[in-house]
Image (cartoon, rainbow over all chains, first blue to last red; front, side, top):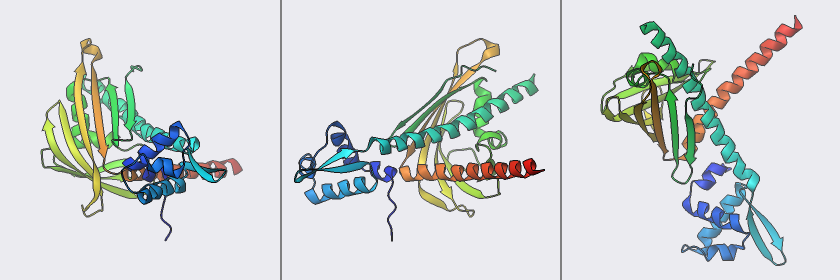
Length: 108
Length: 170
């Protein structure tokens, strides 16, 4: 079974959010990322794997080391999605504006 | 129509909370009714082309509203809201969850907290501010809300395209 991976799943976890914040500032090796956390190296590497599968994080090889850096384009998807959520509210509230003004006229 | 009514929408991804603030050009009593009375709610609660249909609504603490968003092709998406706190014309809170047509909720849901306050202004120009806080246990659920509407809207656009294509052939 193919596990569904998306950006929302990625940011739903506090450790993964922390990793994103870390590498947003500078690209880092898996070891240097793991050093920032109290959890096991394995757990951190699992989180990095999920972030990579969600395409929020990209890897780059420099010599013998792998560096992880943030994929800004993918992060924008989250904002786009939130924008749509906002538009639903906008539509609803514009409908309510019309109804309020109709009711007000009826009362007069 | 006043066009400079406030509309503010922010999302705190870390706390999975959405904050929505909107002003309406009406007095507090009327706006409160629009959010708490079934017959007015059903006229605006669903974003077009969806329609809100309330099966029952018992607006009291512990009471529930069971309603469906009905899509352009008749598809029904049921939800239950359970009122957890009500302070008339000031605040009410509810738990919202998707459900099946037999009222079985699909958890986790989201917590809604709505605050109402009338802004000071001339009597003819009354403005009521509504501030809504929505906490989502799961962002995945929020995504589901979106996906449903996107599907509905995409279908409507397709229908429109087909209709236009048919008309232009004539």
